[in-house]
Amino acid sequence: MPPRKRSDAVRNEQTLLAAAAAVFVRSGVDAPIREIAAEAGVGMGTIYRHFPTRADLVVAVYRHQVESCAAAGPELLAAADSAFVALRRWVDLFVDFLVTKHGLAQALQSDDSGFASLHAYFLDTLGPVCHALLTAAADAGEVRGDVQPYELMRGIGNLCIGQADERYDPRRLIALLLDGLRWT
Amino acid sequence: MPPRKRSDAVRNEQTLLAAAAAVFVRSGVDAPIREIAAEAGVGMGTIYRHFPTRADLVVAVYRHQVESCAAAGPELLAAADSAFVALRRWVDLFVDFLVTKHGLAQALQSDDSGFASLHAYFLDTLGPVCHALLTAAADAGEVRGDVQPYELMRGIGNLCIGQADERYDPRRLIALLLDGLRWT
DNA sequence: GAACGATACGGAGCACTGTTCCGCTTTGTC
DNA sequence: GACAAAGCGGAACAGTGCTCCGTATCGTTC
Image 1 (cartoon, protein in one colour):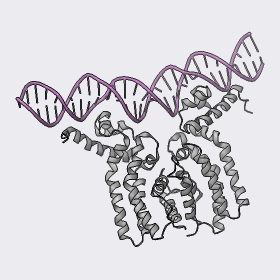
Image 2 (cartoon, rainbow over the protein chains, first blue to last red):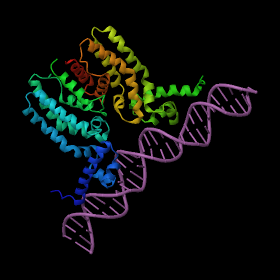
Image 3 (cartoon, rainbow over the protein chains, first blue to last red):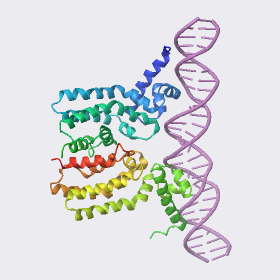
Image 4 (cartoon, helix red, strand yellow):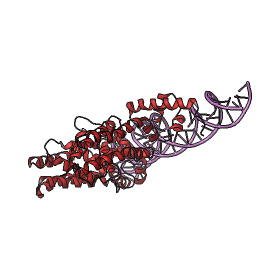
């Protein structure tokens, strides 16, 4: 069996998660590693030891929220009158999550190697949920059946990139996209 | 009247444009300034003197193509049977332009100060064209009338971000978006 | 074609960031 | 208390944007 972790390591990991969460809010998920290290009061080596890539840190910080979003999918499907409504509500949750995390949508598309596994994590966790909603809506004849979960999620993520202002509300365009999904 | 420009300055500006075009193809519009300088065989100071910000260089390299895209708008409107078809064709041109310039769509959304004026240039040049197409289609009752050119262009630009592959074709989602535009 | 002021050039230098690496410290155990 | 293993800190290196100024080149004037 693996040896128990040292108490200082456990403590530092928690400290780091809290610090990263605070810094992400303040400076976005692209914040300099040094800034997170300073916020946590640890050295940079400590961050890299616990979270070898930036994606690991981002995933750790947002894991609960992502999983909660994943869990909401089946619930919405069971509760809503139509599968399309469930899909729309789930997309709302997804969008709410993305737009409140500065730079996260951008990071999801970044080809920066430090973010490589972020893409994969989101896809693995939320992809099946999106697939279920999409399939249900397609089976009910509420949306066309030739759209894949991957492209829908990526499209939605892309539409969330950039600072929203009074001239650009990602939700408006995403609503348009979902309308386009329906039989024409 | 302003004094004539020095011949070496004129020559260098042309050399730089050619070099930048080549490097943008190879390494994207985010390529290091040093790489462009090396390609052109000039010092970095020379680049910054001619093109103070990266956006200036990008605009200079792509000016002709952007203007040609802008010019196509009215022509398509005059030639096509319906305003919606004209809009769709124009969007195709816009998308073709964006997806063939690695990193350009990303740059358009970047809040990096070096790209700040790029956004403005695209908006100034293509915004009115998009507005005309959108208005014509709305007047013909072919699309809803509550969508602004800015949000449409930005949405399309966003959908073009990231490497297209067999799982993600920006054109598919943009077609969906345009379909959503017709929904009343 | 020589001299000269204006213009432009080159690249060293600074600031900032990601990432690695290794000597030092802390922890848990005996 | 002593010891090995685990963990820590931050100096150091590499890549990049951008500035600044000594030097080189150009165009003009005589």
